[in-house]
Length: 110
Image 1: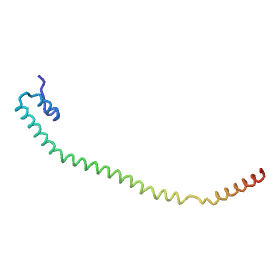
Image 2: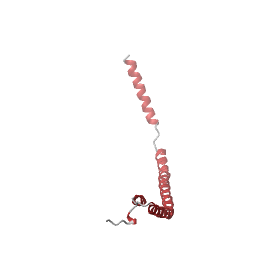
Image 3: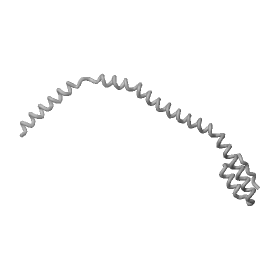
Image 4: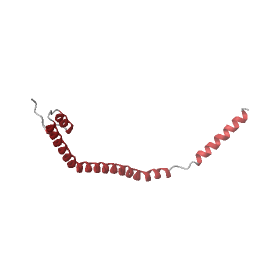
């Protein structure tokens, strides 16, 4: 017969074991013990779960703030780059010259 250790099983496993008990009174007593133990366990880990959830929220907030910080630092660099773009007057002048050439070629080839 194998030994059954409560520390190595879950509460659902314990309930399965209790369900195998033939005597109704003994089965009820086993289920009561399991329920009491599970309730105590859940009460004990509630603070842990709350703390872990808070920690996860803090990590998400830190990640969000890190992204915001990167954007905040980068935006002035982008603005500086954009303000340093050369004037496009020469490009407009070149385009006007091309349009004149196109117009002359069209006039000749009609």
